[in-house]
Image 1 (cartoon, rainbow, N blue to C red):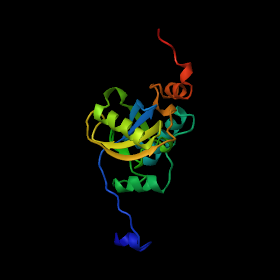
Image 2 (spheres, helix red, strand yellow):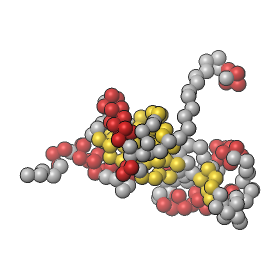
Image 3 (cartoon, rainbow, N blue to C red):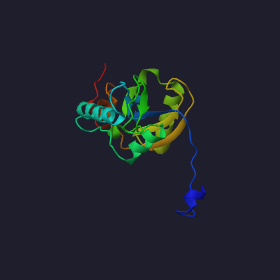
Image 4 (cartoon, one colour):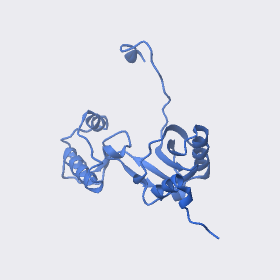
Length: 189
């Protein structure tokens, strides 16, 4: 706090919560998709430097996402690597995983693991209730959880500009179109 006060006398504190970064997509006040978001990481091969591993992983992510996802070689990446006890020139041991970013953002090399099928009902209910309370029919709700199939959670944020394409194979785009054009829904007689 004292270090922060050197920049400004007003300091805001937030609580820190360990866990996995879970994004729940709610469309029309129904859960359509859920995914654990993981920060960019590399896996050691015992031969290449961490910098080479990051560059190779970044090329793979860019190719898989039409250039939308890359791991930037910036201060944040360098700091994350350094805080893990490494630097760019170190050779990561075989099969050792190293997170190279803190934030689990797709555009900085992160990835998604679809967990819609195992989402705990408490988490689903909390997401729908939050969407209703905010009165936002299309929203991505971010929670910290120990696991997607457990009921414990802490809300992090709500994002009304949720990326629908990121959640395949779930039908997010289809549900969004259904919300916009409800008269186009199939009629069951």
